Image (tube, rainbow, N blue to C red; front, side, top):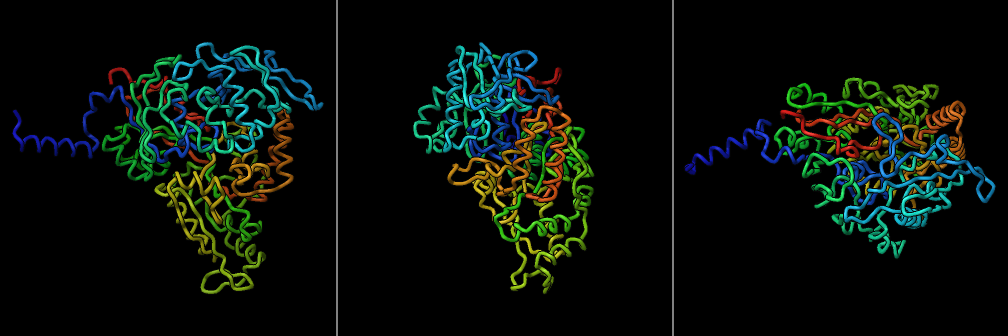
Length: 560
């Protein structure tokens, strides 16, 4: 029998070993995986308020009809075969209005069921369409549901989507994320109140909401989500009995929890920043596997163009000329996060360098500010002709050490240019859940867009996608950008099937974006995945669809 002092000493030793990151793996550790992330989902509804945290959790628990895989190829998850014009499942046609459209036929997997055992059928397809088409439902993307003017149902599994436009991405219905009609239809009885009544938030642990390898069995706001195996899952059995996703908004605390053994891995989609991961690898690379994946993550500063100061393009260009993005990339990110010229990533085939460039040029920034009416500079601060200071506010996610560091550098460099910029940060659930999505930021909001390959930026740049109370805050054009030429280019790109002509249109869009600067381009982000050495099968995708969509391929390495 152990004496009390001995027990205390062993307890002290166990704590010390854990803090040092040397604690032995607990017996349950091989069938439980604890993942650290920096954000908690502010909604679990798959078709409202897109956010990385939500996508990551739902990747474990739901399956879309189609998705892009790690090779950037379109694949089926809920369907049997991706329809194409070549295989005859997609047929160009003329719409009742005489426009060129297309009919695209899908067949759902025969074994696909919701987590309560209810088959996934065309009833769910029709309900999701009905909800998405309602102007006050809050479901996005609005253009997809507007364009989808009819659905023909052949039986419980086969249906044909009829679109009023023939787009180059006619068979990528990744955003048509099916809702369980038997659960969500009662919540949709009052469409205007659906955002509040949806069972995804009111009854998050209801198994019938989910269709993936795992179910949400516990969700504590701001803290953690517990996932357990879905007994109705039809696919390859997942390796882990239980997965816990812990929210640790402060990235320094996230690293400490990893070293202490409180979490096993850090998700690359929303974990340690690149500079932290590089430093972490130098110190602890022998104990972890660190994967780096450049991807379609665009770090930028959204500008509220309703702000009269930022409505002047000369001020926007001056803000960009006044910051040294190359030095920030070199000093903070070891040169691994290339400076963004526009919103299109060099990894995407439609990228062009033939756009206006904004190198660090304090003299040009000064000239532009003078021209914009801020020539009066007293006590280091620029003022307009009425003596009002050039003063703005910048916001980002509190606790993200890398973003906050970049933010400090930007503020310092803008101060050198005579621009006062105040910092006001918020927890991610508030920043994304209200401030950004409802356009409550007064001037600047720094965050990242994560997109899919050749993703047309309709929701972020088209003038019809500005969130308002009237559309129940649907749309992601948070800057309020209104530009007829941008609208035209977006609409033309979507329906251009010829690759060469579409590439030329993409180049025009990038030049227009870099000229008008609705947002300040910063970097294209590389994500860092920090994994335990005993975990295999995690394959970063490099785009918006997370690794968790393939969790059934994750496994414990043999001999570990």
